Length: 465
Ligand SMILES: Cc1cc2nc3c(=O)[nH]c(=O)nc-3n(C[C@H](O)[C@H](O)[C@H](O)COP(=O)(O)OP(=O)(O)OC[C@H]3O[C@@H](n4cnc5c(N)ncnc54)[C@H](O)[C@@H]3O)c2cc1C
Image (cartoon, rainbow, N blue to C red):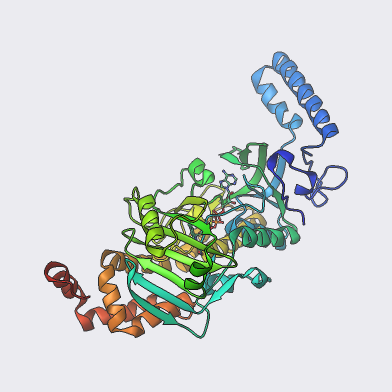
């Protein structure tokens, strides 16, 4: 395994797929061997020498001449494609590019395996995109979902097929990265991208905390806060937020939440809370798609109180959820965005791994094509993402708007019409699309005259409960 598992300060040579000579066996490009005393000494000497030569050249030839000669002296590693971020989107892109014979590297600010705040639900949609073995990582496969509205009115849904499989993201993401490196992709851990810059000759410079790299194309897979998107002027602020913790339950709580997914809607507003059981722990969180997210911490406290989990030791993490469903530009010049960086989360469920993987694959295909043709117009990438992902997310957004505005109404509908709920879970299992669900819901709205009911119920009484 060539992905490093140590802290950045002890970054070791096995983090790089390098040969004994300190060069990449595939590319022959020079690699910096960080962390070896004799190499550090050599590097320091080289840097000092370069600085002295640079100063001398500038004094002799002036700034322009010095700039021209700078390229000769600098050891900037060059690639066909640099991928910023090695989450599911970045690792998938790296693997696909390597399989297509493209000289690609993924850089990540983290050293893997790394923690990732996530429920770790692997839906049927995600499973379908994974063409290698990951099932040994599954900690639970659940056939039952308990749905509640503000912790009450529980509805139990059971299915022959599992609703989803549950994994720990640090192990899952590590497996994806292992597969990419196995396929021949290069990985540089502990390299935080600080910006990207287009050069006049077509190359893109990627600035990292460990020096510059250079490529013909750059894929921004650096997640919700995407530095690449910021740098390229493609950043989008449309997003929800979630708080998540892994909790070691008491025996009693472990029994109470064993074998089922627990979801409680409407607290926080425009969101829900979840409990996913895994091996010896529970993944617990709340998320909201509302623009007013200030109260998310209070909502998390309430969720813990209501579910009996308050007071258990836990490390809590917060993270944005960049939601999709509206068309936005996801490429510019030679820079493409994928996964969370492209805002491809489902605005109804918050699911994002499936589209991260799928967009990574689609991006890799378009990058390989562009490199072959020597033409770098990625409007085809935009069209494919819009058609295959964004259009479906737009339908999810349509349902989300109704469900999160009228959650009580939807619970009433689920009680009155169990087939509606069953249909939603067929969607979760990947058996139908959002378009099918919308067709069905539209029929139900007409049948039950739903929005009149909601207005009457809110004004007059406890109806529909
Ligand atoms: C609390 C929570 C729960 C969730 N639960 C689920 C779930 O159960 N199922 C599901 O399908 N989805 C879930 N999601 C969504 C899912 O986590 C994301 O959609 C998914 O991780 C996106 O993958 P990605 O590769 O695009 O980004 P990420 O997984 O975020 O990976 C981005 C990578 O980029 C690196 N990076 C960031 N900045 C830089 C930088 N400047 N330089 C270099 N590297 C950088 C990071 O270290 C990281 O490794 C959840 C999200 C949250 C917040």
